[in-house]
Structure formats: structure tokens, C-alpha cells
Length: 403
Image (cartoon, rainbow, N blue to C red):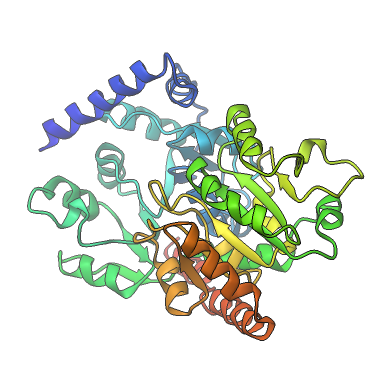
């Protein structure tokens, strides 16, 4: 099985290398791993994140660890360019790298260089050689905000190698009881149900969000619908809603801010109704605002009444909790099955899945037409987020006791 894994890793590299000739993200992935000169550290703390979303998810623990142990050097790695390119200059780390390709030689070289005394991986990403090397050197490895489902490879008859990876982990901090039970069924007892650190992150952000005066003026006196992390499929669904509700303001924050996608979005919206954030001046009359930069979304929801979260017509929805922390009911597409919080919000009748324009219209009308009902939902959704905070404190108590 290890031979097949090694062949798979190399085949993946070849595919990315071929794609790099015509795909910018793939090119960044390849170039970011070329001839990296790793700094030499001694007894550092290593935090790994798959991408930007996992960085935001694990940030509460990273920040708490760095505050508690300010003299310990912190190393961050990312698998994806969407994480590395945006957070490569973060003040929460002494060095930020792309995670090298998972080979035995790369694992030895990298771990030799950063010399970690602890390794923390957020949610997922299981790499055999890195995990094995940490295990052999008796370096504690923790998974935080982990979540497991029966259909994952760990629980299949052919998943023996991946089950072995799980055995290299010192302790799992998982989001729910179901994840704990699945691991226990494999004979893994070193599991704590801590919850999801994203709740800590979004709740803290909602208590003290960044202020955007121009957007406050743009939305002043108008109910506002915030569409976050949207893809073209989401935008196509929302277009008619914009046209049907000229009394509402709409803010779109596309997941990707490529010029061709923004131009396409503007063309889909009612004529002369839209302004880009980069061109927003003192004229706040347009109905729709398109955010054409990165880094604002988590605080944008403070200006809204209803949120739509993109990705549900693709691989899966993006972060619903950022909006929920501000008390906004959230709407999303049909692909949400992997996201526990989305299921929870649906049960609370504060989250709503839609598959077409008719579904969207019904939910929008349901939320917009009854003020008292809306206020009840808003209160309920904020209480849900607040009640689920505390994962960071629990994880830090364990890490501190184990140090």
C-alpha cells in the first residue's frame, strides 16, 4: 500500500506540473516548492493548514499558543497557494512555507530544518511520511477541529495505510461525538470532543469587526443582502433576486476576483446598477457593490440582514459561521453535507438550502416579510454560535499540560 501511495503522490506532482503551464494556481504550487532554503530552527512549533479556510479555522489556537509561548518560534506551512499567497507575511509566524511534497526524503529534510517540538494540523490533511517522521522522533502531533465521516478512506477495507497514519497522531480534537465514535471503532481512544475552533474565531471577529465607512454609507438606511464567496453558478442564481428587489442593496464578494469573472457578474446584473469597491467614491446610489479585493468578507456581514454563502453548487459551501456570528440567516446551495454547522443551522431553521431560483425566492420572502420572525431567527443563530465557542480554551489546556 505504501508503494501505491508513493506512486500516487508522484503522479499527483506530475499532473500539477503539466497544469502549471496553463494554470496560475498550479504554477504557484510548483514554483513555491522549488529550491526552498529552509531556515534552521530549534524546538519550534509547527502549524500546518491545507488552505486559507483552515488557517482561519486554526488561527485561534495558533494565536493562543503564540501568546502563551512568545519565545517559541512558530512555523506555518500551507498545501495550497490560496493559503500561502495570502498569509505568507502573517505576523503569527516566524517563517511560512509551502508544505513539501510528501516523500520520505522531504519529510526528513524539512523536519531536520524546523526541529519542531510540537506539530498541529487543522481539520484534515494526512501525509504518511511527515506523520511517520514525527512519530519516529517522538514529536507530538495533534489534529484540531477534526471531523470524520463513514465514507472516508480510513473506514474502508482498503484504507489500512490511512488507518496507520491515524495511529501516528498523539491526540485528536474533534468537532462532534460521531467523529469520536468512528475513531473509537478503529481502536483509537486518544480523542477529545472539543468542538470547532471556527466558532471562537468568528465570534471574536463579530464582537470587534473591521470598520468600512464607505460600505456603511453605501448600505445606510437600506436592507442589505450579502453574498459571500460566490462562484459563477451562485451569481447566476442571485441575478433575478437583485432585479426583483430594487429596494434592497446587494454586496457580492466573489471567491475569486479574476477580472473576467467580475466582468461577467456585472454583465448579469441590471444595467448601470453596479459599482466595484475599488471604484466606490461618494456616490452610493448603485444597488449592487462588488468586492474586488481579498480580506474584507469576514467583517462585511455586519452591514447585512441576510447572507448567501457560495460554493454549494460546486465542491461544497464556504464559511457560513462568519455570517451567523452577526446574526444573519444564511442561504446556500445543495452541496452542504460535509458541513456539520450547515446541518445544525437547517435544524434551527436559521440556515436554508436552495437548488433553484424558485427556492431562493421563497426563502428570501420568508425571511424578509416578517420582522418579528426575522428577529427571532437572528437571535437564535447568534446564540447558536456563542454556545459553541470554547474549543480553543480546551485545546490549549491540554497542550499546556502536555508541554
